[in-house]
Image 1 (cartoon, rainbow, N blue to C red):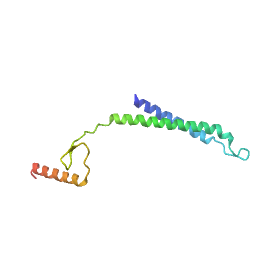
Image 2 (image 1 turned 120 degrees about the horizontal axis):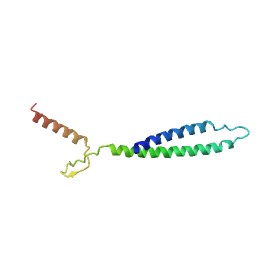
Image 3 (image 1 turned 90 degrees about the vertical axis):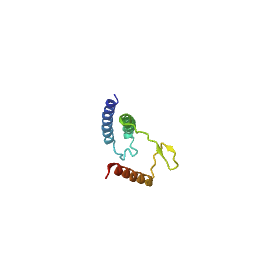
Image 4 (image 1 turned 180 degrees about the vertical axis):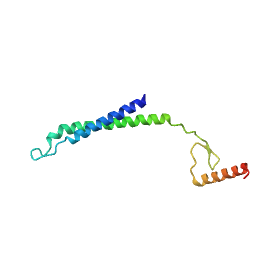
Length: 116
């Protein structure tokens, strides 16, 4: 359902981009007769509305893609760590010394078990 909506949004965004490019290319250049470029005002208004529409479509597309990715992403397993004060915590211990000591201990245990 959401995948089909994503495809539809992408097509709609492309159509709107093409329309905006055509509108932008059709904006007349100011001349001596029309220095404030009043002839271009209706085209500019339409182009700005198209740009707003593109932005809203891109925002909707990003939200849908995020929902699909979050749904397909496997949930991380929460692991309980023990900190230096022997307290259990869910927060990941990221100290490089701790991680290095942990790897060293794991290697020693594997060597002991493996008999190498």
